[in-house]
Length: 263
Image (cartoon, rainbow, N blue to C red; front, side, top):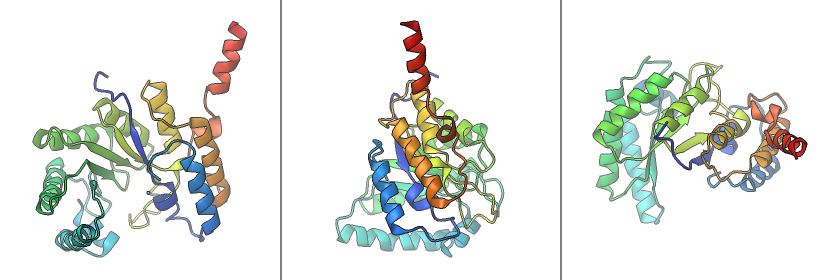
């Protein structure tokens, strides 16, 4: 537990990845209302398998790298900063099966080489459990393989909760010192390219915030305000969402009641 970070940064995926799998169109006014509410909580950021790459973007790895070069040309020409890169399906793929940690390491190497080619310094390398194959051992193995080659490279985890292991995987990441996570308010979303309609969304933001704060890890997020955002999201989509803390509530009022009784 000695490697726990003192603070974590959370990238909120709800308005983008969260809503993408919903069957009906989400009204723009509802999206704006949701984003504005999320911004008030203290959240700062509100936006490996070859076969998956083809299903996701209709491009294989080589074609994806070529597309990334075109994007980087555009970003450089327009002064748009690039601060992170992501390896999708870093822990397993519904089309190709298990992904070896060494393959993830090689993909990270390709991305770092590409960044160096364009004079870009990446602040973070995101490792994504896009379709929910990860378990705590896999999290440790993949992070270990990457850190063995680049010990100072900051790692972020993009975790899905398809089979209920998402929060356990987040805890493993925290115990390994990972301080950057992608998550989705209320557990919104899923991956429409996964080949599995049950592919759940990212780990739930308010559940992650609760876990971190209870462990003494600062998030800078107002949990009670975030819970209200989660309830808003559920109302917008019109069906139950999988977040736990949004339904149970935080411990604030219970602690206040206990404190009052003690006084």
